[in-house]
Image (tube, rainbow, N blue to C red):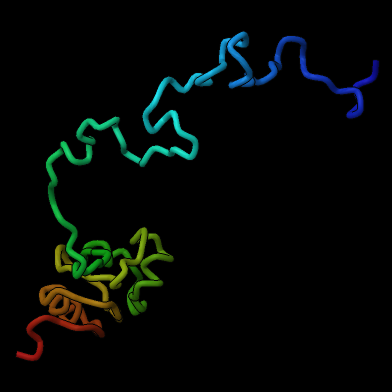
Length: 155
């Protein structure tokens, strides 16, 4: 017999007809239909609440609560000057170029912050969301330019 869509059948013994409950005592699943007697679970329309443990104190209430999330926290992707030293002299450094060059893996929700660890031997045009004062001083000392808020610059 050819294998055609019109002739396909499941393998013998692989399918089983579903159990029809509540069809008389002789069926073995009559009367209460396998639901037991009384209680919410025996009623039609019953659905268990997520996390319900049968009246036992649920695990989310037994465990101690810990920590908190600061909704005002700033999200910067941080990079140090020692990584920027790998770039060519005169290049423009911004969030997009850093991501394209693979120096950062993501751009933070609030942008990129440059920190001052390491030395910088090339002049760069840095245009980022935030810089540390040390980073700004080292970039300017190397002959580069800085665009972005520098802490304590207005003092």
